[in-house]
Image (tube, rainbow, N blue to C red; front, side, top):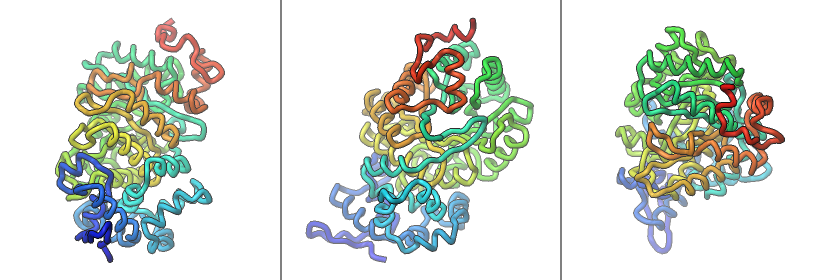
Length: 454
């Protein structure tokens, strides 16, 4: 295996695939923090040249964490379709990129081939792509999933209604819920991040969500994003639960830092299918984000794009309804500025779809990051062009509980109108029956939550 190349009269001799993968990555402050980034643009290009000539078999044989040490690796490797992998094992990463971008190869062909990819292959090809490449290839791929409704169908753009409140006050949550619904937000999920992770508090919010959903016959799904074990206990005590949520990482050690393992997720899924309130087969909601493994010292020396790709390989095994990268939430230590956040959002969305999970994005930033709302709107437009399944929806894009900025109710409505998209069809029909949407556009009732209380 050749890890050497000559560029501009200088010979670059990389020692391992891990080094090649890290240095081929686009500039990320997290990789620099970890001490694994390319020293300069020339070394980055040299690493990309070497990476482009590695075979998919080379990458399969070099997982980010050894098979014997890591259950995420085992899940990814054991899930590979060996017949499909045999067809492509000798392809180079460069050849895979060309195949994905070839207009003759459509989404169905890509979805078939994806069953032969490990996450390291997915990350590798992402590193060779420009931003437009990532958008173009992701647009081809459609991944749907069904909880109570079906997300990801052609012509749709969905949104999670995120009515977070600094004290989990039921009335404050309700006010945000009702306002968001009038703007057409909430078809992906009514999903709250709780301040209080106790079973009692989470149950109260779940019951309020269920009341809202039943009172106005809203075709959607609900979730309170507490720890997976808390949500499981809520279900056991009879709380109405459509989706079970958990933040995930790309290594066993990273997941253990979050307080769970693969057996926990398998148990949660089985419990939700048996005792939850969803009508469809996809009952899990996962969130990810580049840099989480580095923050918990669980990256094994690998770059954050590769570790992020492994999150999607882990997620695929459990057939989730929703997966999204909270792309700018973790902070400037990992993604320094808007350029890095936009790049990461496009990478994550592409890698998730190529892996075969129903992918959304929390297009967001924190106040100490060199980004602003214009940057996040730029990312949302690019991701909509790429066929992203869903975004977040928070009043004015300002989360007063988590203290970060993301997409608001208006952005989803504007993006739908701009790209000729609608909400999930049953939800869109509900919006029209309620008078919030007419001829595909919001009516003057948008923003007036009191209409639902009349």
